[in-house]
Length: 160
Image 1: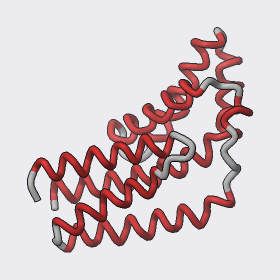
Image 2: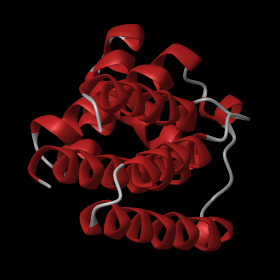
Image 3: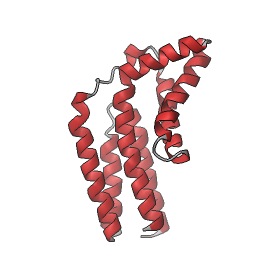
C-alpha cells in the first residue's frame, strides 16, 4: 500500500473520529470503513486481524449502546463548542498518553473550557458532572472504541 493511500485512510479515520462527536454522523461506520479499505488493499494477516478486531469491538459497542445513558447535549447546559473541544482533547490525549489519555483529555478539556466560561472551579466541576451525565458517557465509550481501532490500525500500519 502506498504512502498516499495510508494517509488517505488515516484522514478518513480522523473524519470518523470527529464524526463520533457530531450527532447524526455515523462516526463508527466511517472508522470501520477506513479499516476495511485498508485491509482490502493491504492483504497481510495483520491487516485482516485489525479488521476482525475492529468489527468485533465496534459491534460490541453497538450492542452495549442501549445500556448507556442517551445523548442529550442540550440538557448539559454546556455549549456545543465545549463538547467539541472535549472530543478533540480525547483524541489528542489518546495519542499523547496511549489509551488512558482519552479519558483524561476529554474530562480535562471540558473542565478547563467550562471553568474559563463560568469563572470558578466549583462551577467548572459541576458543569463537567452535568456534561458527563447528559452526553459524556455514551460519547466517551463510542469515541474510546473508535480510538482503540485507530490505534490498532496505526500500530499495524507502522510496525506490520
